[in-house]
Length: 604
Image (cartoon, rainbow, N blue to C red; front, top):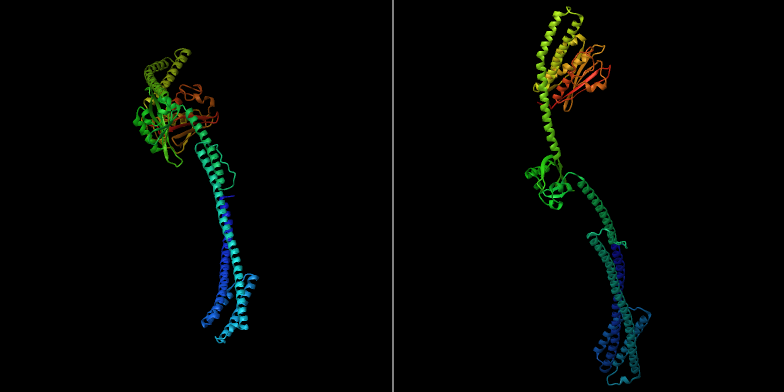
């Protein structure tokens, strides 16, 4: 039962009992008062009877009129008192009736005595007359009877008064006892409640000290027991939460320690609050030595470290911020510093979580790659220079050889035997092909070395120039070249003309039975322009796609199709100079589509 209910029931029950007993005490007290009042009236009657006896004797001795008046006054008082009596039982009614009768008889007898004495001369001895003596004797007897009846009436009222007083005393004692019982009951309930509260307090102190296995016993079903039960549940939930928190903490710590990168948390004041093993290794300091110190003290450039730290608070995140950590042995570790803020449950920034990626080896490798690239670039430059010089210097002796061979052909063709004519023809053809190869090689070497600076170029105008250069081939083959709306790009205009000229020229050259149909289109994408040149030619098998863009690679004999095999290699080099890619999609007998991209951001 709830403590509040217990108190309410106790107070309610005892309040009813107290009200009843208090009412009884009040009633009993009133009865006692009434009985005392009646007793006083009876005593007054008794005293009045004695007074009447004294007055009758005085009158007998002195026969004064004032004595008669005094008698009448006392008689009236006695009659009035007698009429004011409240009779409670038959005995009292009988006694009161006797008193009334005695009083009336006494008054009548006294009147007769007064009559005899007033009508008899004083010198006559009326007292000796028998009638007077009889009257006087009757009055004496009546007075005695009145005294006796009045005395018994007083005793009757006194007895009732004592009985009522005893009853009143009993009720008062009962009232005090009931009040005491109420206090005792309240004390017991309060004591039991205090015991439960003490048990609860002991449990709270025990749990507060760290013993989450403690359980408060809840034997009763009151508010304190409900509170104890709720506290037990709260303790169990807290234990479960701490177990989960511990597991999460161990998991997080395991993740931190599993990282090969130094990880550290930093307060808003720039003090280290936690680190992992990798941080200890890279600094040479223990976790205990690191916590509480300024994080920037462990970098070779503390001011730059602090600037990066402040940047985290303004931008919320810092990525790949270059720094160098100094080991206490003075060993330097190059790192890329990555950091972000972390917050408390209220959404307030608590500090910074930072990770440092060791890039010492990567930096060394980048230096090696940079040196290798520089050497490769130098080598390529030397090769380009060599190709240019070689192709340029070979042109003059080749021109001389070709001129003399052609001279021999003009002078001696038909004058020698057929073998000589055939040999001279081979020599002329070889000289011409050699000159074509040298010209193409010279063009290939000039793509990067002699390319013009990039500038805005209208691709449609560029395409028109390329088609003008191909006009003879287009007319000879009955080719039709169409195009969509083409954009303006930043590029080397001369090289774009050469790019379109080579690709469209190939599309016309490698046509099938149908007249060549070539369509040029372009699409603007996020970071580049995508161009396509689609034809209805003979197509190419997928296994040959990789060979197309290599120098001096031919898929057909010279008898089938002319060319040096450098054209698509030149196209590839032009596209790559513009930051793009080139590839082909084709199927034998179903034409080809050549794709290439030009970067929007490519600049020189």
